[in-house]
Image (cartoon, rainbow, N blue to C red):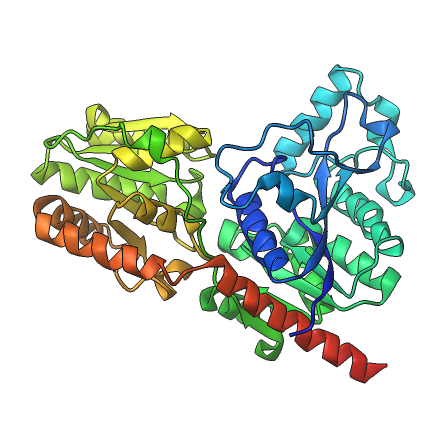
Length: 443
């Protein structure tokens, strides 16, 4: 196996992090590093109150608090010494939308961080000392130009870009250095929006996927979507399933006491179309007809919150349904530890690491057949996302049958032993080796 020098582009990376993709990138990068891969990781960050003065900088993590959800079995500080972390001043964030981006621009304008002149600039005129783009798509192009320029100064053999916000940066880096590009697909616009896709985002994804020398999909479900919706040859797509860090905060969660009568059924994720929270709520109403002491928790935020609150009132189940809003990681772990059933009712879920996390806390899971995790979890109970009757039945079976709960917990725990980031990293390195050989032949 040949060791590689990788120029990697991601949305976020600890300690600059808000969501699950950053943790996945950290765990994958750590596993790659343990196998000898050298990585320069480039991500959008905001440094200081005035981002205009420092667009490209090597991030110093020495004075930053280590996130409490990071696995410290290998020293975080020791690992961070093995990689270079480069920040590009940018407002790009996971799950950002045109509206939320514009809100950010408005806030910066109100606080005099940027000026009206900056907002009105045409994004084609941005250079390495430019400011934020006037809209989301403009910022993606500006970021691609600035971040891609790193390829001129960083030694690398392969470029690795995660998801649509960084695909164009990867394409620009490939143009500059001529090195092969891997596009890693964690989610697609067709997953996030169904048939109502944002055409500009779709085209950016398509451009990146077409320019890539190899594509990594987090599931066969995602691979099929890339082929069917984006017209990409299956021959250049490799499936590398996600995994989960085995670490959990046992000191905090061991003190959580479960009520033997009042069972908690948990939904954790963005409250959006893709995640299917409305199907979870409809199933909750059916469960409560037969198990009135059950409590249903929807943890997360999103554009469907108000609609679901109204629907909860219509179903007259408000006393048994709780909306928590966005939770920090310690709160998430306590909620996992308190739960009796975890439900992932996604309409389209490329993978779904959250159900693996639930298993870490010995929580039986019911997951959508339309999820990548269904490909690796044989022990999980599976339903079609739209079949709320069957979803309710599966939940009731777990609540009512202790033997079934024990069996599911034991089987899932055993399966999790084989779902390791080190195995995923091995497969990623095989992709690197493949395209390095292809590049050598083409010279």
